Length: 346
Image 1 (cartoon, rainbow, N blue to C red):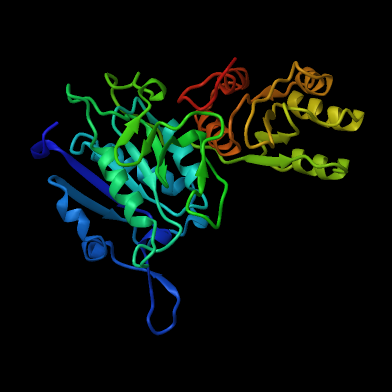
Image 2: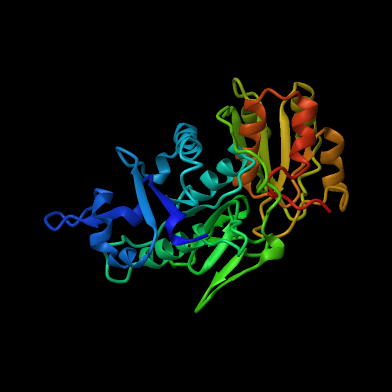
């Protein structure tokens, strides 16, 4: 693809990367992103068009919600034919949730959608924002000699690594390497050259038409197990009004207490039509419910295996599937199969 017909839409949702310090109060404030070239003059060296869209007002990532995800899908869908790729600037706290949600909501995506941000504001001397932004733009416009995009999927780029969005988790609040993809190889590494791991990149959608989705159901809870968890707590979560699904964070390879009350609570909830998905608390590894008796008894109670899904991916995938009113059997089935490369089924 030549520079003449290459272009990027830069979408600023909010977050640290777009903040500057108020010289009077010292507080960080969002700045108008039209000032971007002032803080990142290197952008002028790109030989193609970079347009910007700014959320007004910007959203702190801790306030990110499905309405903002729908807005992002609208922006990408409405501008899909005009741009080679899209770069979303986003706060780090919920970036993995947004990336996961977009991977499901943008069915048939055949162009790069790269989320990035920074741990330090872009106006700060030691910021990681410049490198993240510039490299994300380069990746969003990277094409093979035949014109096909190199990375036609939703990704997160952070500190020299490009990762599949629905495989990422924020794991560091202090250092620049904020994100990791524990259960799937990185899609690219940026050093002197950007080296793409083409075997791992999802390219099945390139010939398909983009189908944007906007329906999400947020009647979901997450329950993390711990030694000593009480029945009244588990019962209260499972009895929450309107609850349709629960992501159960278990131990190790999908293990949980064998107490009769615990298994009974789960079985009763499953029989009431609540979908319970088993994901591991461990950063790396997968749920194998047939490996130990404790996991096997969860399976007998009706709990669905989440394999190596992140919690962020499991939550947003459930929102997506429940929002589209699939039957319980269909949701359970689709949770056990990848629809956007989010799990590896052995």
